[in-house]
Image (tube, rainbow, N blue to C red):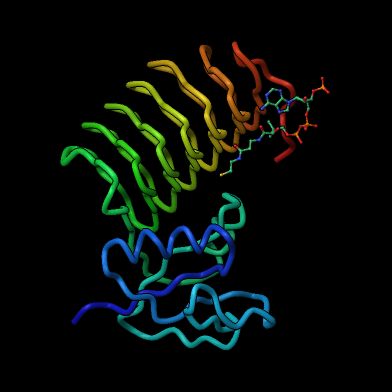
Amino acid sequence: MENNKYLFGASGHAKVVLDVLFSNNIKVVTILDDNPNVIELSKIPVLQSKLFKIEKNQEFIISIGNNSIRKKIVDSNNFSYYSAIHSDATVSKFATIDEGTVVMPQVVINADAKIGKHCIINSRSVVEHDCVLEDYVHVSPNASLAGNVTIGEGTQIGIGSSVIQGITIGKWATIGAGAVIINDVPDYAVVVGNPGKIIKIKTK
Ligand SMILES: CC(C)(COP(=O)(O)OP(=O)(O)OC[C@H]1O[C@@H](n2cnc3c(N)ncnc32)[C@H](O)[C@@H]1OP(=O)(O)O)[C@@H](O)C(=O)NCCC(=O)NCCS
């Protein structure tokens, strides 16, 4: 029997995840959210998360755009997860995509790319061959990763940015909108501009 599909998080990002699921004719039973005042999203009922009972054959995607909140929710629950790829994305049969990850429309993911758990590969982004993305990475719309790029846990690659081949970006870093990354980036760094320069190191 097919598992019942759920989302956790009734945010704007959840609307986009729902469209990914609709493109595959996947029906979401219920969306959970901490906020008791939200009762519906895109015509799907929203249930306050603390009222939810975990049972067998339920699977989740955490539909929250913020990488650290997504991780917090995964760490504090014992859910099973599914992943979803929009029907209009192009994903190599040699790429791997782990549980909880969503791939938005018109994304291209090329051969031998490895994408971790609970990542967001957002609309029209490109993940080239042999890239390795750890868990909770978000590649924002129109960002491009050239071949053999490695990205650490929880890092956000900003909208419209580009990363040249072979670069290593650390964990929980932020690449600014439109940045061009030509040097490795350390953990927790915030990098903007062309060529990308570090403007701060975030506290953990
Ligand atoms: C990089 C970023 C995280 C910085 O945010 P912040 O920490 O709040 O930084 P601030 O807005 O205080 O800006 C600090 C400085 O960096 C500059 N800066 C910020 N973002 C920049 C960018 N993308 N490109 C160039 N310069 C940028 C600011 O102009 C400011 O410069 P100043 O000190 O000379 O005035 C943010 O601007 C950004 O680009 N986020 C990406 C958003 C995104 O991709 N969203 C997609 C969602 S799907």
